[in-house]
Amino acid sequence: MSSGAPVVGITVHAAELPSKDGYPDWRYSVSARYAAAVAEAGGVPLLVPTHPAAAGQVDAVLGALSALLVSGGGSIPGQYFLDNPDPTLRQTNPPRYDLEVELVRAAWARGMPLLGICRGHQTISEALGGAPVLNLGQVPGSRNHYQTEAHTVSTHTAEVTPGTRLAGWVGTHLRVNSFHRQVVVEPPPGWVVSARSDDGWVEAIEAKEGFGVCIQFHPEWLELVEPRFGAVFRDFVAAAREYGEGRGVAREA
Image (tube, rainbow, N blue to C red; front, top):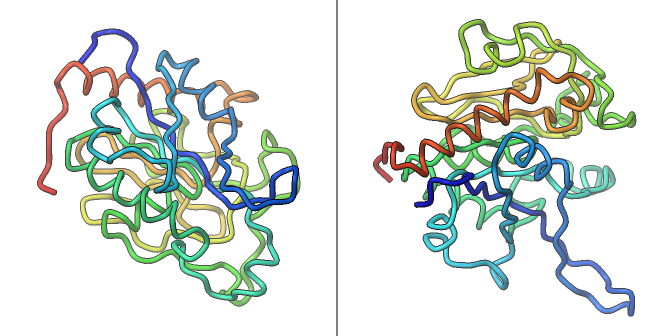
């Protein structure tokens, strides 16, 4: 692979929406902040379609990348969780979920660096064998974790496990933003919980070996007001560069 800036794939949300003429059409959407954070860290962001009708073959897609960032979800209205009180993560978007699971498993088997944010954090955990996510609406007394404030506003605290990658980047005491209605319960084998919210829910997990980091909050927005969060993307891009130079370690599929 090239010794230039590493190419980082960023998955994009897919949803069937009416076009301006009123006809249904599958469309992609993703916050530009993911790509901006990768570019600012020295990587080349490449958007990866997540609907089978427009997606490339998994091996071909991964062959063009040095790392994979599984992004957050698209706009799923809160009413969805009222009408579907206990949906699985897959049920909120089956085509996207199925393709991202394929990408995650194949990327991890190659030893490719993985970063998951928000929904991506949950998808990676499930794809690699973690427990199914939990709908907070089904937990009596649980507070709302989907804030109405701007993305750069931190709305609750989190404690980070000392000695983890995350602690090295941002410290052990955080204030973070929050845009989720489901949570990771148990990480996959070979991964550990690296942060919890002030009410006890998993805020981050990471792999014991290799570069695998999943974060429930949104560091791509928080770095705009607290530069320390940019370390997440700088180390991710550095790991992508190592992988692109042939220093990644393949795993058993």
